[in-house]
Length: 263
Length: 269
Image 1 (cartoon, rainbow over the protein chains, first blue to last red):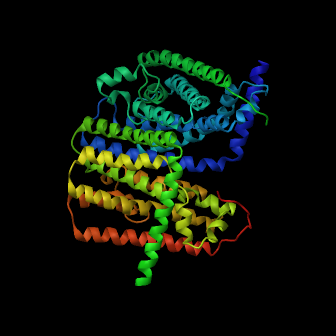
Image 2 (cartoon, each protein chain N blue to C red):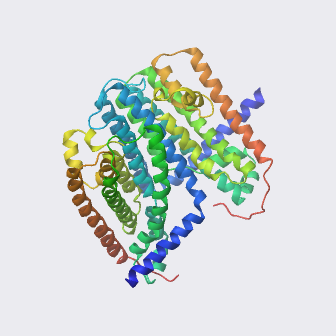
Image 3 (cartoon, chains in turn cyan, brown):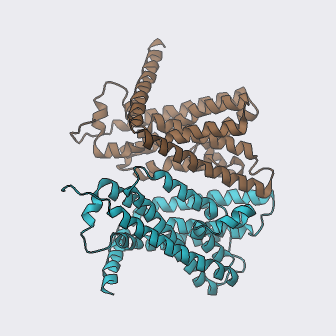
């Protein structure tokens, strides 16, 4: 409990910081609005051309609001932070501090993510209502269960980002891997619902972690069903555990290779 | 007239020299250079997948564009962005350079301040963007000479317009004190209107795309010319683009008059 308390202090301080510098979130809010506006226009044009299976236009706009919310809410800069710490060598100064480096980064980013989720969440609701109106058949009773999926999606994404950032321990240039991961998340859920993919790709995507970052939470918000809930939550839990273990494993593996030569 | 031609030739020579030095510097780190360029090209490929799925869902056209039209605007936008960032990557740092006082270094150089400022840095990932456009064009347009000629002309026009947008936004720093937010967002904002069919937008947005946000001049008008060539439209494209670039150039030098040196002493390596 004492261990957890010190990490919660880290979260509290990072939350205070992000609230103090809240004006820096303005750019992100503008871009979030821009993306939703562009995609609203795009999907409206696509739906004009014909019916799209599985989602009404209203559901599609809300789907995008939620997937963008998860991705914008996750934006903590942890990949760049870890990359810089490792490449500049400043990670060496953090090894002898009384915390676990990976856990410190998680709880430090948590404050930022909580702030982001609140402000982007409010904006998502406003934009969704203006552009698409209420979600048909939406029930507030199912929202807490959908939010569990949102939380797990953020955990999966966050710890995979940490793992990718920590590959800098062993690779000279790891930016390409970051781009590939990011685009897999975009294409297997964030921009396109899994139901739109060709059947052969759907069956592959449902075994991979990328769709569980954005697709699963957004689908549960716009069209909640207990069948889907029990189908995606266990898989999200497994991928969350895998991503945490991978990040801790990558950290232990990387730290063994550090050579410090004075300061 | 002769004086202006000589001056223009000097500017092109200066850009060429900066390009050679920057390329030689990038090639010193070959593995990193190739990996970053390849990563960016792969990154862009994912959007082809998005459009393939979107068109396969409904078939036909989206916002008046078919699949090949969308690939043309993507290829052109990507290569124009790549070209502008290979030659003028420092456009993204103008605000930081002004605010930190590093602009003094450029003011002391015997060449055009804006050109020196823009050219003194290159971007490795921009090569991926640049080459990606050519690959996409080759795959979707094969030997279509009209499309290729508009694509090549569009790279020059689009690259200059993108640079002009960035310069204009960053120049606000001379007037506002710190325009880093506007500077970092302006180009990305415009690009968002370049990579989707023009027809998905209506009314005011369409007017904005032909004025404040010159997205139509970067990709959509070149596409129209590639499909149905019209000398009048080409003349309009060239005139407006030249006017936009001249405005950015003059706006920068007007702003520069407000710059006050902080007497910062730095060494440029």
